[in-house]
Amino acid sequence: MGEVHFMISEAAKRVNVETHVLRYWEEELELTIGRTEMGHRYYTEEDVRLFNCIKELKEQGLQLKELKELIPDMLQVRAQRRAQKKTPFEEKEETNPQVEELSEIQLALLENNKVLQDSITQAVIKEMGFLFQANERQEEDRYKKLDALIRQQQSYRKESARSAPLKTLRRIFEA
Image (cartoon, rainbow, N blue to C red; front, side, top):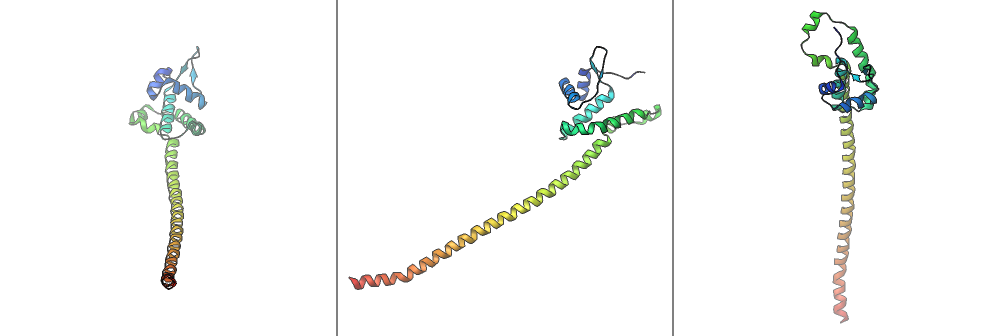
């Protein structure tokens, strides 16, 4: 029994993207996709799985240039799966095809994302602490300046109050 091949429109439906997206990913990620004698693309079930994996990783926020670095590993896993031929009994026992699509690379990426998220969170909390302390210092300086101005104003009023009776007496005696 030969391998099933899909034309680009059918592969795009299976991945749930437009055909131009598959062409774009093929070009940007430098993927080798089979061609017919007339030069038309054809996709295998493994190609569709690879594109589904790429789509899922893109939805998780990875960019194509990051994915490009991961493609060799993904292709290596795909080749290893191809090399491991299963017996008919093992194929029947497999119950969830989505679990198979969740490759070791995806699991590693998910774990790495968790580690990055934790480290970024700690860095942001630390930076916010520094900013909060700086803000508190600025407010403290502002209140010290304001206090100094109020004290200065009070001292001016005291001096003014002391000299006011003398001025009144001078006016009375001069008149």
